[in-house]
Image 1 (cartoon, helix red, strand yellow):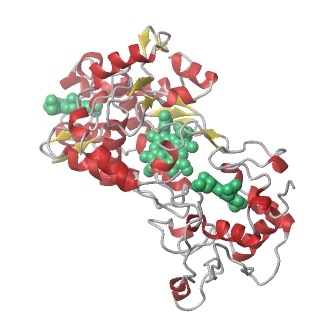
Image 2 (cartoon, rainbow over the protein chains, first blue to last red):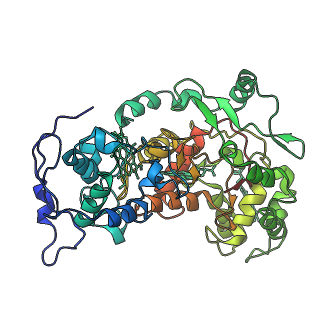
Image 3 (cartoon, each protein chain N blue to C red):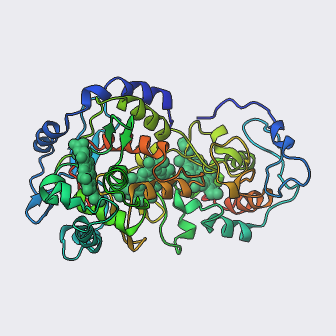
Length: 152
Length: 293
């Protein structure tokens, strides 16, 4: 399942428009052994804000595709991807960070959107052009919440 | 989950011509195969909502959006008195016999009774036009008559007048199999363009039509049960819209969802997608005007 990953920092992303780059455009990061070991913000995330971002339909909207037993008080869990229960047992934090940042680097051809990628799409709506779905902070927040998904 | 555009494309490409025109015979034969005897019906007219796909089709079964909806929603569609789309159909009937434009003519002046003259028309749309050198959806056909034959203002794509008329004309094909003629003119080039769009990932969510409607139909995406994205029910009364809506409006809605810049209604891109998606539903009964959630 694990694709061979190049240790590539998407340098092109840094070359975004002159002047004030949008706060939402993604910055470079380093992939090591199929994961991103370093926090995108240099800080740990906030799990409560992460839960919020996962649920929010305009942000993570993870329940669109995943079932999560912990969140069963929220209606309508999707069936597109696997249930996320116990996901922190299956993956290291670095691996989960890469799955969130750009799942296509982990699961070839997956339907899961890249949450921290702001360039290289086709026909993005103007209001989202040059932006990633989640900010670096939101990725770290979701990650810190996901890290509590342990069964063992 | 692997999404192999190129493989799918090459498999489908060659068989399209062979499939064109198969609508009727395929649907009857396949229905026996599916073993379905209790087909839904409206006013005694049976609707074929599922058929086994001909060889080379990207789907194993071709299934109408009808089957993916709740019993309540289905019930609304199966009874013309409770189907809210009939408010528009009535407007269409009125417009049919109202003279408009410089020529002082109504649709009826030339076409006579809509039930006879428009029978089966919707099932073949979009249809190749030799003088325009492109496929024309029903909306374009209607506006061509208004502009060129009546000297009247064309209707806007999503106007109540246009929706009423496409619903009225579509209704005259209800129960007949979708059957686009890909052999006419340059239809295959448009089919290919539509196919390419169908498999192209778009927008910030980077998803193609096929990701949802081919790979995941039958599964829930949040509260929505994904269908195959078939076109046989349009224009469709959508409970969420509280209104009848065109196929191109639905296309736009799906592109909006993935945060892609939608094409315009009536654009070449949407016409190409309509040609391609109509072909994917070959053999399904026209359900116009359908009811969806």
